[in-house]
Every structure is written in structure tokens, then in C-alpha cells.
Image (cartoon, rainbow, N blue to C red; front, top):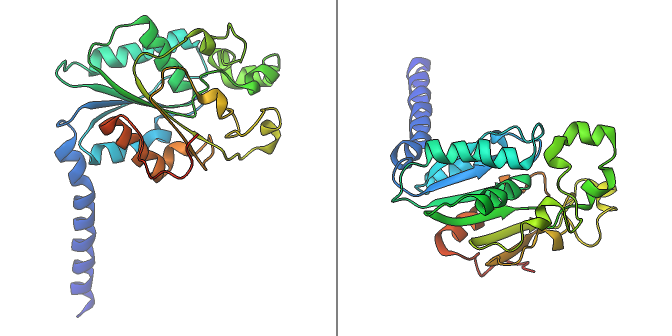
Length: 250
């Protein structure tokens, strides 16, 4: 085989791979229920991109919502940014709207659902949600650098009974929670009683009314990119519970 034929073969092969990878997105983007993704505090839609790709491959229509998590309070994030995305992009009443959230995104969604009606709401999966707040927010709420970094929403995530997360009460929708027990920052974990993911205690990820709860050996920062976690999230959306063969369920 001469070099020209070899080059053509390589190009054709690469084009075939690209076409194969693109096909699932083109064929499935408008066929299934909608899944809305909400990233965490200080993150962007890019952090949920792997989740987005897998959901598209499984036939869901995906809306990966961008919102300024460190610039405005949770109430504004919920009513303006999430609300606008639902109003303008979820316009098919015959399709269920499911949600997968990370960290702060779960609280934004809970606040929205407490204050708005969503008749075609499907199932919800929250990854590492501070449903009962976080000791990190308690410890650093008066620290200038912390307040500068996390903004108004980050300062609302305390553990006091009257904090915004704790004021939301019982959930009345089908919710599955996945949280981690591995940390990248032992310094913050010292401030958190019991096992944690580096930012949220396992026990504080729980909320009354949830349907299922799963603990995985992952960190708060990267849990949304883990293939096992993505598979579990999709399984819950389809079945209303997590896979029964999981190793560590609390």
C-alpha cells in the first residue's frame, strides 16, 4: 500500500468515526422526554457535558441550563434563569420534564418547584445536594474571600433551621439522591461531621420524601462526570429507583 492510499484510508476511517459518534445526537435529540441539567456553584454547563452526551445517546432531549451561580441569590436563579429555560424550551406538554442537578442546582430546582407548578414534571436526580445545608457555608459566611467567591447563593447554604435549604421542607416529587464519600480537600472535611464528599456531609444530602438514596466513592467536584453515576441517574429517570446491585447504599 503506497502512502497516498494509506492517507486516504486513514482519512476515511477518521471521518467514519466522527460520523458514528455524531449519529446518536442527530437521531435522538427530539424523540424522548426532556431532561434539564443544572450545574453546581461556581461551575458551568461544561461540567454537565458528559451527562448531557449520555442522555442524548439514550434518546432524551437535553437542556443544559447556564446560570450565574455566584452572582445572584437562589430565588433569582430559580425564578428567572431556570424559569426562563423551562418556559421557553420545555414547550411540549405531552413530554415529561426530568431533572439532573449537581450541588447548588438541586436547591435551585427545589425552590422553583416550591413556588411554581410543573404539571408534566417527571423524575429528579440530585448529585451531592446540600439539602440540609453545609458546614462550610456556616464556617466561612463572614469571610470576605469566601463571600466574594461563592456570591449570594453560596451564602444561603448554611445548616441553620431557617436557612434556605432547610426551609424548603419535604419534597413531593420522585427524587433520587446520589452523594459521595470521598474528598479532595481534607481541610474542609475537618469542618464536616461524619463522612462527606469534601463539601457536603452524607447525612445532609438527604431530604424527607426522597424515593431512593445512593452513596458512591466519588468526590463532590467530579461526581457528575463519573460513568457509574451517570448510568445510575439514567436508570432512576427510567425506573424510579437506583440499580439494585450498587455496592454502597445508605
